[in-house]
Amino acid sequence: MNSSKSHFNNSHVMRLLNAALEASSNRYGAYELKISPLHMERERLLQEMLKGGNVNLSGQVTSTEWENKLIPIRIPLDKGMSCYRISLIDGRKQNLFSAVRTLDDLKQYSVGAGRQWSSTSIYRHAGLPLVETNSTLGLHHMLAAGRFQYFPRAVDEAIYEQAAYVQEFPALTVERSFALYIPAPRYFFIGGQQQRLAQRLEYGLQRLIADGRYDQLFHQFYDGLIEQSGLRKRRIFRLANPALSPLTPLDNKAYWYVPD
Image (cartoon, rainbow, N blue to C red; front, side, top):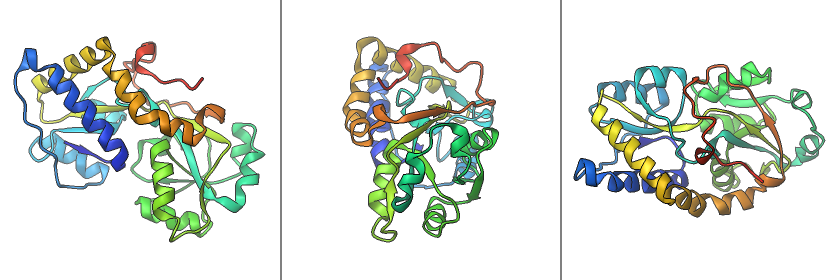
């Protein structure tokens, strides 16, 4: 098991995974879950998962490559919360973003993104000016240096990275007025052609949805962050994802969170 997300999100993913495995034990029997000590960039993780040795399960934002090469469980791990991105900025520039009313307005400013991130191609397709590099830390340094003006992150990432980096970059702030919506859900992916494990997870997650535990876990972990980030009050700019699989279950309302 490997996840590239923050400790907070990892806690939610682990609770969901354990619950799904437990819910499927009546049909599939006992299980053993081991956490990989390896921390890898996305490309190397994909290669490890294709081997199916050190890592055979990971929670990741979907992409065409991952869906084609691995086995996706097309149930969003976090009801699509990771599709909502709020931004880290230099807090002295909040007034610039408060004045943004349309996506065209936002195109006045450059966005920071990782070269290997699936979200980067979505920003590019939307016509947002991009500055790219290889690491999250590098992007924080570049934001502080003014190389770009905003750094979109998943809600939990933005809040926790602001706290983690503000001592080094005192002007680092969570932008208050808008969010991007990127239709690129986070799924469990199975490597090594382990069809039985994929079937087990699908079955277990469906049982959690049916008995309400899928929603309970979501609200337990995310309601506080939704409130803290003011997500319900933000202007939301929706970006198209031309690479999104037609198999994405967009019509299943049980799978998705919508701010109200």
